[in-house]
Length: 293
Image (cartoon, rainbow, N blue to C red; front, side, top):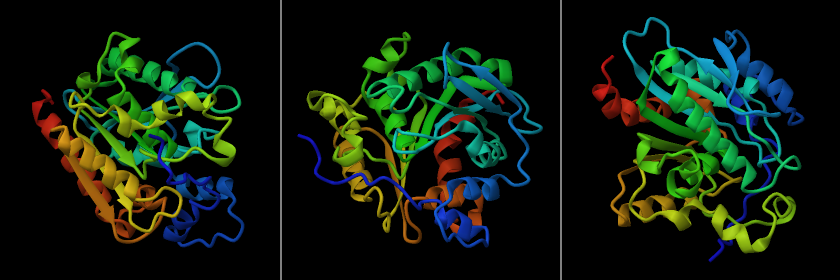
């Protein structure tokens, strides 16, 4: 059954991010927001292509002074599956690298260059590349996490639930150490300008991560603001309940303050969403202990 809860196109979600930086957002200009968020952040340590063709680049952020192998996070950004750029998320890569993680921020094809499931297939290719190359950058491929915000959270969650995508690369969801969904549309309605993005209505149920939970998933961390007006927090609540019923370890963190961008605010300026980084660090801690580093 297809969900009836809407996924609204985010027009001003980075307003909170700018407010956290002490700036005022009057017009919803995302370019200004990213400029503020990335001010003073060093560029990626390296960039590569995880597959041939456009929008298949991946940026590498290495933790400073790391000894031994470290956990790896492949991060997918949001943008309603219709836009976004990996360089805009430099602040995410740097913040997580400062937590001792090897972070890979991946581009993927968006509409109209592709429709569903093209961007999920790109995500699987990025994860397979990360597993093959993590050790080149000091990462532990046995400690591989997928993560994303908004539309990127849907990509990460489908990779960790619908086994078909990773299977194309000789992998399975259980090969992942965990999945992190920030403000994730995990059981959402396809309406309005999302209709052409997801193509034939017959395949719309396949876009819902909640439909594929059957017990073989890796652990999940879900972070969602209760005041999110773009993707309702009920998505994460229902998804957590489905994972629990299937016996899959899940941690749900509901943020009392902020909206759709609240988890990103927690990465940009932790004092404004202090629950986010401890939740992330706690989630990767078990795998970190298993890593030789």
